[in-house]
Image 1 (tube, rainbow, N blue to C red):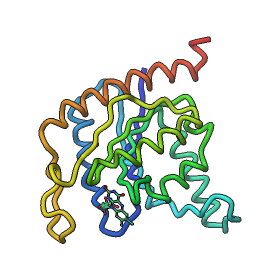
Image 2 (image 1 turned 180 degrees about the horizontal axis):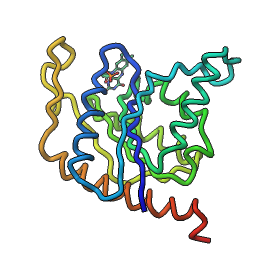
Image 3 (image 1 turned 90 degrees about the vertical axis):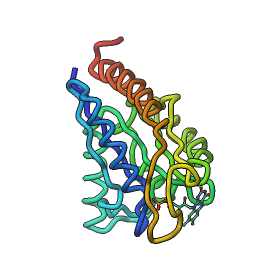
Image 4 (image 1 turned 45 degrees about the horizontal axis):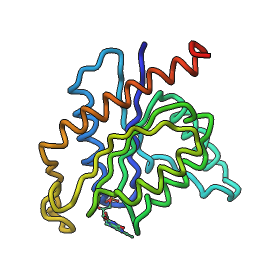
Length: 192
Ligand SMILES: Cc1cc2nc3c(=O)[nH]c(=O)nc-3n(C[C@H](O)[C@H](O)[C@H](O)COP(=O)(O)O)c2cc1C
C-alpha cells in the first residue's frame, strides 16, 4: 500500500524559523527510505486563505479550493508548528477550520519548536483536531530554543537539533505510517 505524507509548515511569519525545521523533518523522512511512502512539504504561506466566516473574494475562493484539494491528497500529516502566546498560530488554526472530510480518518504527528517546544500550543490544538476525527500519534517532537537552536532571536539564528531527536523522529514516523496505512484501509472500505 502506498501512502503520501504532507509536512505542513504552520508558520506564515516573515523570517520564520519553521522553514529550517520543516526541511529537517523532510530530510529525516526521506533518509528512512520507506517503501511506497512519499513526503512533501505543504507551505501554509503559499495559500492566501481568508478568515473562516468572511465572504472570500475570487482569489481567496480559489485558495480555499486548492488548500482543500492539497490536504485531501495526503494520507497523513506532520504538523510543524511554533506557538504564539501559548497557542498555535492563528493562521494555522484558521486553515484547519476549513477542513473536515479532507482530514477525517487520517493520522497526524506534531513537531513543535519554541522555548518549551510549543508543548502548550500542541496540547490545545490536539483538542481541536480530535473533533475533526484526526488520529494523533503519541510521539511528538518538542524542539527547544535553548538546546536545539543557536543565537536565538538574532539574525544569526541557526537550527541545530540535538542528536537525541533522531530516535524520536523515527518513532514518530513509525507510529504515523502505521496509522496512515490502517486508516487508508478503513477509508477504502477494507475494514468494516
Ligand atoms: C506574537 C508572538 C508570541 C510568541 N509567544 C511564544 C510562546 O508563547 N511560546 C514560545 O515558546 N515562543 C513564543 N514566541 C517566540 C516564537 O517561538 C519564535 O518567534 C519562533 O521563531 C516562532 O516561529 P516562526 O519563526 O517559525 O514563526 C512568540 C513570538 C511571537 C512573535
